[in-house]
Image 1 (cartoon, rainbow, N blue to C red):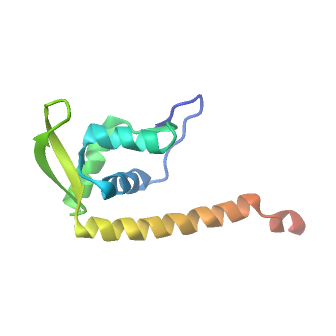
Image 2 (cartoon, rainbow, N blue to C red; image 1 turned 135 degrees about the horizontal axis):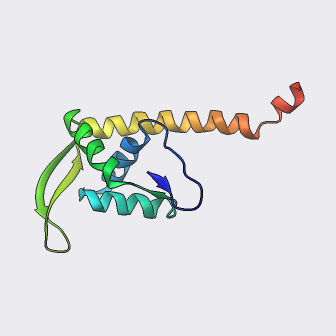
Amino acid sequence: TRVTDDRRYQLVQGTLEMLILRTLQAEATHGHGIATRSFQASGELLEVDHGSLYPALQRLQRKGLIRSEWGVSENNRRARYYSLTASGRRQLEEEADHWRRLTEAIAGIMEGDSLAEEA
């Protein structure tokens, strides 16, 4: 996954899998659809690399968090469609809660005046 402007960032480990689960929360879709929806939802800042996406999908499937079945895409091509399992929905809830707490903690440090007052 990369940021499409001049800066390049690496996602925190496990973030790609969380983003995949979140993308699949609304409906089943194929790999290219996951990448496209993630890109659009990020305000076109994060581009999911297919070389990272498909191994992550395989990991999630091995863990029982998603399932797949063959279908026909909007382009009338055969495609593997992925969807969340009940375990995947629970995992997404846990990861989303963890992510919120983590980002709030980091924001508190970055925006907080308490560190400036201690200096």
